[in-house]
Length: 332
Image (cartoon, rainbow, N blue to C red):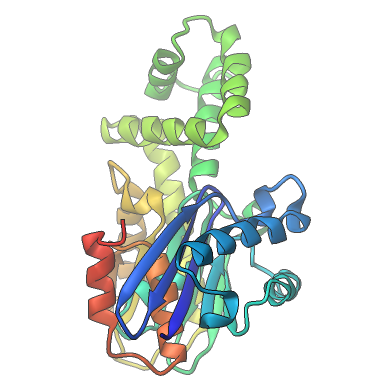
């Protein structure tokens, strides 16, 4: 048995996959967040989160950590060289014999591009843009929130929607239908109840509150509200700028197509794809002579981790069968 491990770890959820290269069997374990940036103890809490996940997956497959030939772990929050060093030490301490560690956005390149090269823009709980070229060079743009000027990810989009309502209520900003929609959701009519009630929902269930605010934002934008559209267009412009920056950091030969993969739940599940459309329009104008191939990822991001791990073993001929397995959901 030749087992490979793939992990896509985010701020809301994690997918941990075990693939047997000899039998083609795939087992995928859903888990909680493994982004240390959202944990109360930060990096100090990460070892236990990973240990519990690994133990659950390995136990139900009756194998040990030393049975895994190679693992590829894309973990949100792996943004700097120091974070990479610390998390690598954690993985070594947990007994993983051979692994590749990267930001989770790199997995989208491997999952969405048949060549294994290109750009991936993540719009999930957070924001990140990564790229790889045929030389093996890698680039990352964004991923550290305000420090890197990110404008994307459900957390930020929800915050901007809520803040725009607050500005209408207390800063004399023009009316937005976001206010009507959010007030209806909160079941309030008095503006003085707004902050306390919304803050309470954030505290009670942060992820659910972010999700609902994002749904309202996209729905209101689809109905034509100018304020909601402005938020999405600003995000799309920011994503386009980050993708352009990643392309500049890498080397793509003249005439070489550039695969641009949009991944993360806000891109893949959005009721209204305005952010992606805005980004694509800007990119086409910026690179009129280049062949840009846009893809919205239709498999879990962790598929890229499995494919990358297999390539580390020189097993590159099973891409289609692995992707079919993820698309069919046979691992559910």
